[in-house]
Each structure stands twice: as structure tokens, then as C-alpha cells.
Image (tube, rainbow, N blue to C red; front, side, top):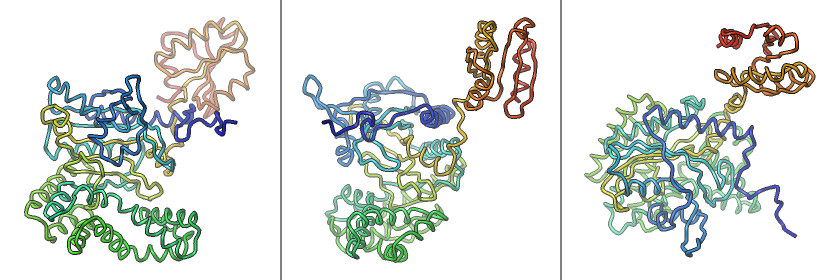
Length: 498
């Protein structure tokens, strides 16, 4: 017997029922709206790419999460796990056709064979916004501003999310000044700081007598506490074990111990590990962050990088997004192709551990595939993490994209042709649901109410004879009778309150 229930579908892949798709579509439409408002144009690529492209451009971590198949020629190909390598491949072939800077966006359906959890599935929609052909900090600020404005357009307030920003050059310069250090390996360690802390907590909890399963669940709660704030953090703490509360209280010392130990295990000497921890523990609002950097013993090349941070602040202020920003020297983003500023956005309460979006500057992605030098900066923003955040904040309850403004129906059979004709006319200016069925009036009103329609237009035999319609405004129960003439649309618009 097949152990899988066919009605359940494949784990990690979603069914989009109308009420679910309405919310996704709302998000995708807002993504397109803001991207186009900034002057970005839409493109698309294939859902399948050569495995070699992703292996070359996305780093080892992502390779373990891809869906691969062999085609008829026995070539290993994959379902695309991200869009940036596809963008680089396309522009490496045709970049001379487009004036710089090239501002493109796409919302592909992507696939990753990840562990399913809150805010993470195996198939998802992801906005990708990229600006290529300009090296200035203005472009970095613009890309960050696009991401912030999308969140705002979806209803989030500035205090409900934070934009964490770092510069990979800061980490690279610091690590390259140390002899015998594998920079990419250490950056991967920095990128996994929260995972190391979660693993530490799980071991401590299991050693205290918890079962492995309970320790794993409690360790995840510990991680969520570290990322949370406000009332949600208090709720998590109240339901936590005494050991978890103790670890939260001692988090500064624990973080230093765990992170420094991970540095030592990956090849750093004790003094190197201590200095790197001092750098990566600098997480502050921009002014304090920059002041702290200037107090550290950094390589001489770092002075120019600090200047870049200061310049970025100027532009972020001009774009009106600086109040959402935190500079975080531990932010690395594990993908190999980032070479400058990187950023991630998180909802502020900490209820969702996963980032809402992330991106950064890359300098040689297109050139490495055979094109000429074309630096770029961009980000990816998935639909699911944003939808989960909107649910947390109660922003998903007021979406009404599928609600027609007008419900139109006949009374008796005779007006049906005229009702259909009138619906066709009104659709030129309004969204209209026409149910040309001779149901009882209560059924029509119940249907209209369920759909969230604003007004109901009815036509009976007498209305038909007099070339009129009867209208009821559902919210107020107000009734109107209108002549079907050239001013009908204007009268309907007044009733709708437009």
C-alpha cells in the first residue's frame, strides 16, 4: 500500500486556494508596483538551469538544497534555487544591448529542498531586484530603499522591522590581514552564529536531563528569545525553563564563549579569535557603530571602508529609510559572490526567525561568466516570510482584492439578458460579479454579503419595462432606483462613495 496520501500533495509544496492566493497575489502585486515605481523593468528566466552554473556562483551551502534531475542527454540539471546566477548568465550574453545602470526585477518560482518549518517551504515565489552597472553607494541605498518601501506598501510600520547592514569588505579585509586564515570558511562560521548558539543551548538542556526532542524544542525557543523583543519576548520567557532563562541572562558571556570557540575550531589563533569577536559584536545604530569601528585596531585599508559606511548613511537618510537601519558587523550572508554591502531584514518582534529579505553588492558575477565587468547590487524577498509576518501583525485580514464592488442579479427570468448586458457595460469601470440565476432574493444577498460586495443591483420585470435598476448598499441598507442612461456609471460611483 502506498504510504503517501495523494490528497496531501508533496510536503513543502503549497496548494493555493483562492483565499490563500489572494494574499500571495497582494504581496506580489505590491512588489511589482514598488519596483516599477523606482523605474525597474521586469524580466524572467527558465525554471531549469545547468547545475554547473549554480555550483560556480552560489556556494556549497546552497548546493545541498537543490532539486536535480538528469535530462535525455544525461546532463544533470536543476530547478533554480535562486535567480541571481540566471541574471548573470543572461547579461553575460547580452549586456551590451542595455544602457547602464540596468534596473531589472523578476518574481520567479524557486525551489529548495530545505527542511520545512515556519516561514520556509520547498517551493516559493521570490522577488529579485537588481541594479547593475553602477558602483556608487547611492545604488546600494536605492536597493535597500526599494525593499523598505515594499514592506511599507504591504502595511508594515517602520518600528515593525529592522534592516541589518554590513560590508563584506570589512570582514574580508580584517581576515585577509591574518596569516593562514581561510576567509570564506570563517565568514561561513560568522554567518552561522545563531545556529551555534542554538546548538550550545540544546546540549546544555539535554545535559540537564531533558529528552533530546524537548531539548531541541527548547533550544529553538531560546534562539527565538534572542531574536525577539517586547511582549512576545516576555511571553516566550514566561514559558521557558529556568535553565533557558539563565542562559538568556548570561547571553553576552555565552555568545563570546561559543563564537570564539567556533573561530578556534576553524583555524584561528586565540588572539585572532578575540579580535574578530570584538569586531563582529559591534551591532548598533549607524552613528554608534561607526564610532565603535574607529576605536578598533583594524587594518589600514579599513579606513576607506568606514568612509563607505559614512557615505551610505548620508544616502539612506536622503531616501528616508535610516530609522529602520542597524549596522551589524556580524552579518556575513554565506553566498560566495557578495563583495560589498550586504543586508537582511527581520520583523522586530522576533516571532519569525527567518529573514524577510536579503541581498548585497556583487562585483564580478557577470564577468566571471564571460561578460565584461558589470558590478551590481540586489536583493531577494520571498512571499512566505512576508506573509507570515503580515499574519503575525494582523495585516492579512483586510485584503480584499477578490471582492467585487458590484453584485448584479435578476428577479425572474425575463431580465437575464439585460442583466448580462448591463454587467458587461459596468465592468468597463467597476469590478462586477454577475449571477444571472433566478434564485430567491435572500440567497443573492447572502452571496453578495459573503463576497464582501459593496452594492447589489437587481432587475425585475417591472424594472426591465421601465429601463431601471434597483440598488441596495449593503453596509447601510440604503436603497436606490436608477434609470439606465448615460449617467448610470456616475450615479453608481456616487453610491459606492468613490
